Image (cartoon, rainbow, N blue to C red; front, side, top):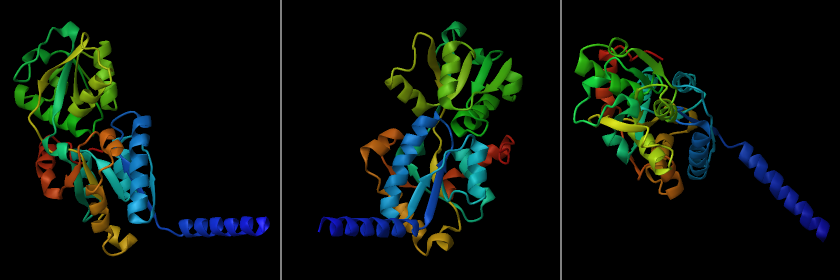
Length: 289
């Protein structure tokens, strides 16, 4: 009897494995705007959640750069991606009929912080401080909406020149966490950073307020979103995009939401990001990836 029970358990296990391997493979990625360990934890949770909701195998694949995320999406190595405003516009231009389907509630009202090292003596102001001119300046990735696109837009608006003409040196840190670290250390005097990453770093005790502070906050704009390929229903069956959208909007797991951090996800569409597209076009960044 003991052997019969063991055999039955083995058959059930094999059957479950076979069924699992026959499930379609659905893959997602995200722009690497923070340290990799944080992103793996966040999007691993999302992959597990979507696996249950969609009844397909869902895998998160990390990438090393914003262009790599767009390329993976264009080449159908991933079917869903968490993009910033600019990278999402670029990805949707690369894959016909792709759509922004969901965004964080807070992503409707996103903003960037300009931060400065204490040695500059620059204080917070209602407008972009003119005293940043001639300083060293760092953004996150060249493809970042909150770290590069929108800050550059406001720099050009305030000074009538590109950042390379305004600052003595311009660098790109790669992600928002490193931007904070570089300005806090004094390696760069001024930087532009995603406000949500800054506030989470402050809450976690990772910001030394005696060394670095916010000197200006941009007006609000739309930013991060979930974008899905235009051929998703052809790959996974009619109605899959709708089912995926419902699943993303229904996320209520506090651990997942806190990891973004977002209070909830809400509907989005491509029209929400027209202003981002127009801004990128105006300053020559639209196809720069």
